[in-house]
Amino acid sequence: MREFKGKTAVITGAASGIGKAIAARLLGEGMKVVLSDVEAPALDRTVNEFLAQGADVCGIEADVTHYPAMAALAEKSFARYGAVHVLVNNAGVVVPEAPNLWDVSLNTFAWHMNVHFWGVLHGIKAFMPRLVAQNQEAAVMNVVAHPGALIQSPILPAYSASKAAAASITENLHYQLRKQNSPIRAHILFPGPHTVPSNTYTASRNRPAHLAPEPHEPVPVVKSLEEMQAWCLKTYGFERPTTRAEQVAEDAFQGLVSGDYWILPSKEALDKAVVQHHEELMARRDPVLPFEML
Image 1 (cartoon, rainbow, N blue to C red):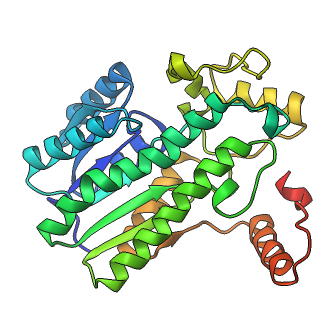
Image 2 (cartoon, one colour):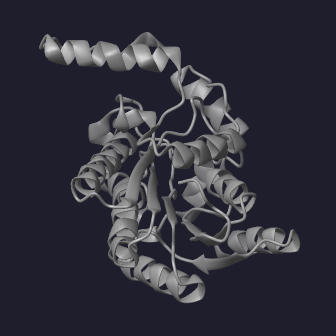
């Protein structure tokens, strides 16, 4: 994609963090942006902030876990702007998980899958028929994560499983679009290479009551990434460096320009872990988690 001015993007989880940063980057290229989020007050604040800067934006509240809401998002987006050229399925959650995956409640697994897998699939199902019908150059960018999509994180089994599922359907989408010589490209975005400060880390505030954690599951009361890092340091013994959301947005934009499927910032420890895992697979050796990835 080379021309952005006057085109339209739709971004989920756009009220803050990575979604908001990608919106700002695309607006800077002259795009029109539909911002969507499950939190109406936060969405209104972000929309008003961009409107005050003279941007062409609108906000549409939508819960990615409900397909009718995503179908309505697609309908309203096309009705307002006539076409959509970039779809970013970005909405995500991160919550602490029990030390053992068999102690993680089915509710916790379901919530992760609902947001990360079903949320992405709902976006694809709602928008792809219209994107195909308009027959224009377009991009579908799905935001995943290193845990699950590339490696496993035994302290986040539900999170990892849901991101692995999202990565799987993204790659299959890529293959199908290429086979059809479609003008639509699929992209898989790995935020990073380090932890990105965002409201994702306090996502429990939006957790549905019917998917509440069980009493034995860890539920720290945190109001910021810093508090979450302190909790992780105390509980798991690690504290990760960070990458700014604006850098992720720049990586996303450059991925749109280059057309690259993999939008994956380099990180030596991660690259080594991926190579090691591949070598273990080819040699049929039991996998060993690299120390750096603990």
